[in-house]
Amino acid sequence: MNISKSLLLCSLICTSAILAEGEELVNVQAVNPEIKVDLYFASTNNFFKCSVYGEETPAYLTEAAAEALSDVQEELQEQGLRLVVRDAYRSAQIHEDMWKNCEDEELMVNPEQDCCTHTCGIAVDVTIEKMDGTCVAQPSEYFEEPCDCAFEDEEVKANYELLKSTMEKHGFASLSNEPWFHFEFKTKEKAQSLTVSFAELAQQ
Ligand SMILES: [Zn+2]
Image (cartoon, rainbow, N blue to C red; front, top):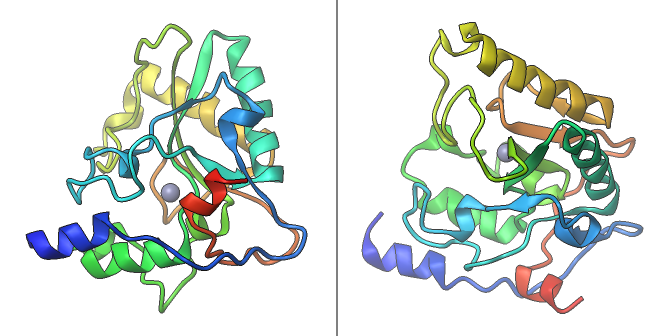
């Protein structure tokens, strides 16, 4: 990405605020402060090399998805583990600008072809760690494809299956065409892409 494009992306401010009726986005940590939030797109530790969301941006999900994630946390906590949220809601406007600025089309959903469920507030990228912050064995680093042999490691396999089964138990689905850390909360209605900005959510 060239510097002017990068700066444009980093200074983006979304102006419209449209939420579907009955839909409310909530701060995940306000629902359960034990969930750790470390959004890669809020830091410079991502493929844009800049804070796309703004530093220390909280993780937002629909209220139902956040409540379900809290239930996952409560269950994992009994085993001394916590969820680490790496990505959650982003507005449709931010997603479109990320798409325009992304150099690798494999990394993002083309907004003209498909709805990115992160813009609906129902998708969450999560990993797990021990409650004391110690890492546990994972299939891959965030943004990296796991190698074919990753799941042959018993510890990796056990940690991944624990994450997946606990998420599924509380209403989240993992998808074969998405990375292992991406989960989507199942809704009866078709999820809608939202445009409410982080600035507007911060004022709620
Ligand atoms: Zn995701």
